[in-house]
Image 1 (cartoon, rainbow, N blue to C red):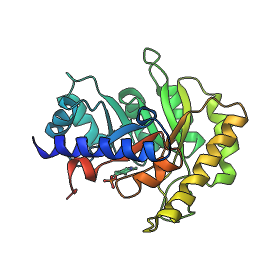
Image 2: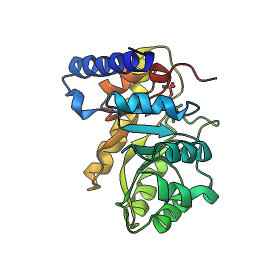
Image 3: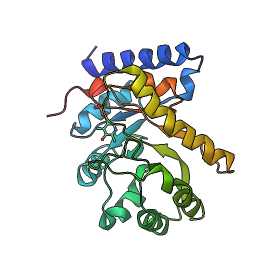
Image 4: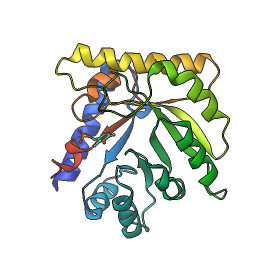
Length: 227
Ligand SMILES: *Cc1c(COP(=O)(O)O)cnc(C)c1O
């Protein structure tokens, strides 16, 4: 077996054991394989192992890989920073966008999503630790942005995404993820039909799952270190 196959098998086992530790079903957690800076050939290997969802951060790089992998039925997730002049290609080529933090971007994605495609799945990125270096809105702005986004055609608000500040301690990781989970619960209590918590990466996947993550974004543990 090659490394990607072994790594995927290990990650799936880790997801299953983290899920069972908190009495969740492993099926309730989608594994997003983050393939940024990795060649299309690596994606092809992962696809052959049953992986269907792939995350990319850089538009040009992603479009080139999509071209090479046209024969595969992949669900493509955009997880990078979005510049407003790039929204058209994103709206046309991707199935999900995880990092929406401005109404202007949501409106452009809504207008530019081709009518022939199903609605583009959207997550609002929350800057859960108020870090100057990170994208995402403050939790205090969430209700207004979510209400504006659900009114737009062509896109569907699925939930929330966050990248907490790195923490070594498990309980600290859990507390950050719990704040995002509470925010999703509150949106649902307001009647919004959201089901996705995009949280957890290679370093903090177990904590994210314990707090209700429905989608973990894993790069390094599947494809190895990025250069
Ligand atoms: C790169 C990236 C990941 C994957 O990170 P790893 O530490 O390699 O698992 C997840 N989410 C986002 C938004 C990323 O940019």
